[in-house]
Image 1: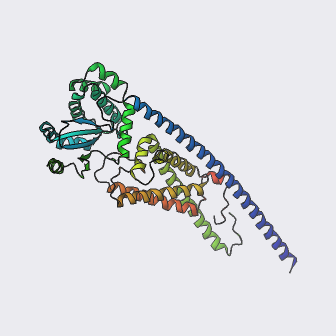
Image 2: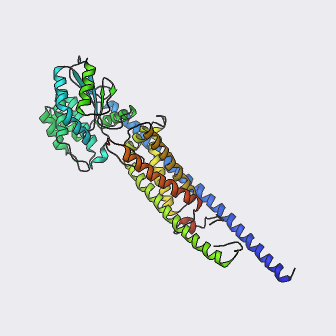
Image 3: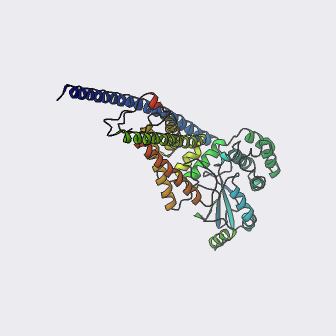
Length: 249
Length: 175
């Protein structure tokens, strides 16, 4: 072995050693970085979940203290004779365009059944489309409906129809509170009662509660229709008619 | 770049070229995943209640943990998204996005197979749909892209303009 080759070998070994030390150092640093980042994220996520869960619990207890009168424990608003053999359960969101189509296609027929005493409608309005307006119209309109039912249950059907007739387009600001008040009064609700409830969002916690309950019951879209508890696949008038007539027999 | 005893200068040149191409691709993958996770995470964070309902709609988790999962999910998504945009702890962050997108992929597939009609919340869209199939396809496509990009980053975490590079945290001999 010549001296030159020995010297080169030594140099190579030294370089390899240095590279290995640098790699080890980088690995150590990256472990520290990972541990630090993971700890920061864990603290942020943990405290965020804690705060949100506490907020939700508070809202639930608020809902219990501000339930609108004349509404069932399950959040139902029943229209029609108690003796009617068929119960049509209707989950709707006043912001939902498909619910408007459903009302336009079936509203008249349902009224006829209700008047004849064949059907009672268990309305289960929910508010899950707040993102579709800039002012949380979904929640505001449902709160207004609760205000109407609480002060004048007989005014609900007219108010319900009026809300759909003047349904705002998705993505806009929705109807202003004043217009909701006007519609409620036109439908027959007392102005002095509904005005503070609509402007103050008195039943907001209740709207969150019934919307959450619907989700827990497996209702993920509106309209959802049930005839005596059985879910319908479609809200086409033929399907609805067939199911109601079969249930009435 | 330290290459241990290069066989010939020609190979070194082509290796250098393919390494820089790999880094360009890794940079693009980081920004793609980071952008998608941050943007959709913010959308979910803006409406936590809807996110919780979406998680519930998949009927895969027990009700007792659904609200906490729905609350934590957007924050975790934004966190790993920002980490990838910054290029900090790139490889572990890519492991998380890969696993999350795999979970979303499986969730959407199961929902579709079981005929569940879901206003899919995994990437923060909302509203009523009578035909969920286009939404399912969109979710599957996005998540497939996320999984592939994450796998690439796990294999090749070194990229340009990254904090990992600036803080000299790389110790992967292959890159």
